[in-house]
Length: 155
Image (cartoon, rainbow, N blue to C red; front, top):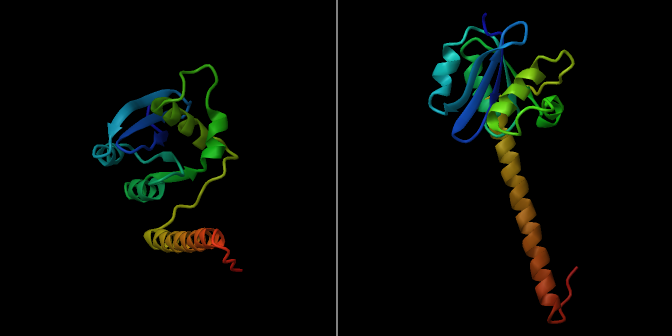
């Protein structure tokens, strides 16, 4: 049977991949795939739906995977977790890949749009700016607190 749906659990260095056929039977299970080996593994799969949790690095991998002709679906983790199969092995990468594969097949699943590099760059810029603003505010408040110990109160 051909793989029609794949779930990938992203990690720092070792990923887990779980693929099923049209009946939902596991036909492609790779619990440990290195970061370097994942692109080749994906390139050798027939075009299929690939589900990924929207986490750190997910948009990069979604763009890369879609280059090989796959239909990539990103899902928020809070929408994936209800599909964790009760009674199965505990939470580990392989079980997470199975859960992602199960979730992406659901007809009413909500998906996250894949961001292009320009959108991600703009988001990075805004996050860095927001961080600087928060650090500046924290520094001012810390300084106001310290000088108030000497009787100098500032608004």
